[in-house]
Image (cartoon, rainbow, N blue to C red; front, side, top):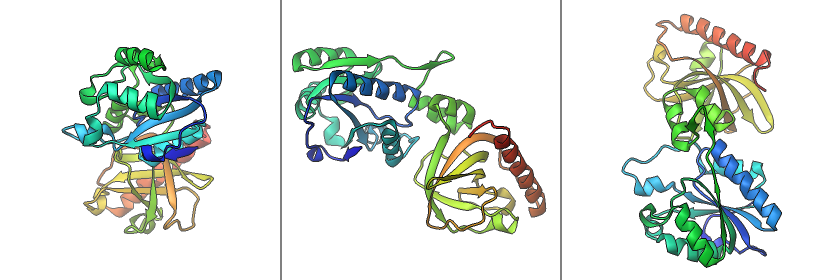
Length: 309
């Protein structure tokens, strides 16, 4: 997959393109439906499949309260790569870009620079200055500029439309099961393992302390899998302040079950499967140690029962 981070880097495609436009934060089930339609359309029509996305998220520029993203940009790009996308153009979104009219965006960017033969978007797609452009307007512009428009209906689960905002809400409220259902996979964060206070080691459960750029960190104790390179381990992850030891800063601590080696400086991914409890102040380290042992046994049983890979 080729990634271009400015329009000036885009060399143009030898053929016309099929372009999916969106932020795609989280790559949830609705996004996957759009991208799969993009790739099928490109294959059937002999077009070059291209995703047009933005960084930073437009809400950072336009919103009064910046949105907390489900994924980092690099996680989003990794997801596109796993799906088999050929090219991704990441346009920097700033105040100047936000003032481009819907007509100017369609004519100058989609039809002009990207040579779009087909544009694939979700049903609620809005674009252009003040978000004045919608899918009907895009269709009319496409007729004039020479590209078709495919509008992909949303995915619904139990009557609820799958959206990035709904996933964010579920993660923030601690409803991990619902969030993962909307994503179609476990929620995942990643970062670099750093040295911590070795509190887990003193209790007999050494942890990898993660420094992460992920913006949504669900608080509590979770059954997880820790992935580094091509290897993964059953794990137990605590996100919080460890009230038994009175720590003030929020920390991500992952105990890899049965793993003894050092991971300092390594990149680690943590996949969340189930929340088993909130953080609690156990008063004494020994009481906390017994509870962690019970939590570890729950994680062993969870994966041992074949509930998840």
